[in-house]
Image 1 (tube, rainbow, N blue to C red):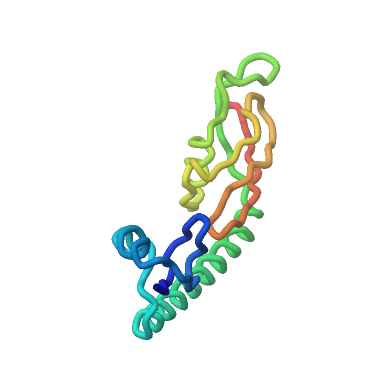
Image 2 (tube, rainbow, N blue to C red; image 1 turned 90 degrees about the vertical axis):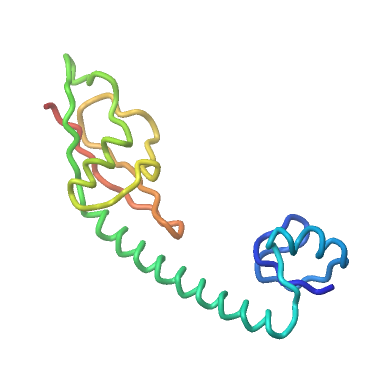
Length: 147
């Protein structure tokens, strides 16, 4: 039986592939789990439209992410912390604090998208990378200053 894979299946193929499988495997595993569609003319046309819509959405997201990268590369944010002697801060600056500082500047960045290579434990200027959709990364300058 020929099926169109809707999502990736290990050792069978990736989404969008038309593959030949045994009837029982298709009926008992692929079709009930909504991993595949039977490859007839109607399903081929429907899947092609869905694929085109996904590509258009992916292109739109990539364009938006690219413009956000350009905007974020010019941004610097301040994080105010309590510091002791030798400019050592109490605790460390977290991704949540950086995300909140960016939110104050008008950027809605999730804290899980902030990538800290190592904890920030001293006052100064740091480059922090931000993971964006469509595989883009932006670099933001973070100024850790005394309260």
